[in-house]
Length: 313
Image (cartoon, rainbow, N blue to C red; front, side, top):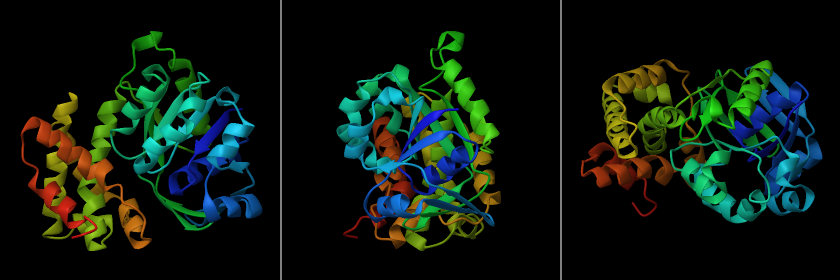
């Protein structure tokens, strides 16, 4: 049995927490506001492809968490918040996290979360990860709706150091435990490469979906918008060179085919736009633009959509 802390119980964190709770792992949740109140009063409900998963885990805000637990009370801490919240998590919990040695797994969009965590707690405690082929959101306080295969890819960040990597035993344990909980999970020896491949998809569809209101299938099968999706994905492939990842055209084509054949999902950025919440624009499109600028290359598709999504546009 694993002891896990899930920081952020939105569509992604809530779904994975429910799966792990279903097979007997101890999972403590963090949330805030009405969602936290509902989790405490009514428990966690997850609607997933015709099924309902229901549990009553302990749930806290950050201050209550710090008062109640020490970091090493957990085998793993998972951060499943929006990438826009990573800096504030480090500010709120950085000193607390430094009191322990527990590894921290990021299951967030973008490629800048792991560097922030590494700076705060040391790279040897950071595990990179990505949720693949999953759509999820808070339908109402305490209730999550999720769909998709909901895979996880994870690995020692920025890449594994062979058999001597101290994170390997835990990663092997986590992979087995997650798979036993019906979470298809694989390990990567080069998680930064996998994070960039996901950013290719995210930059291709997330910003454009927020702008147009269209789901992923509508975008990738539209005669004009599909060209913009492919163009923004190509600009992300180019940007990867700034981090030494060096994605290629085959990565671009594989990712475009993957998202084109995936379920017609409403992206997280579109959901945030509809609910009036801050967008992960800077974590996704901004990450691409900053690196293209550093490389001295143009990214006209991404720059245009980025500008159109600015609040004052």
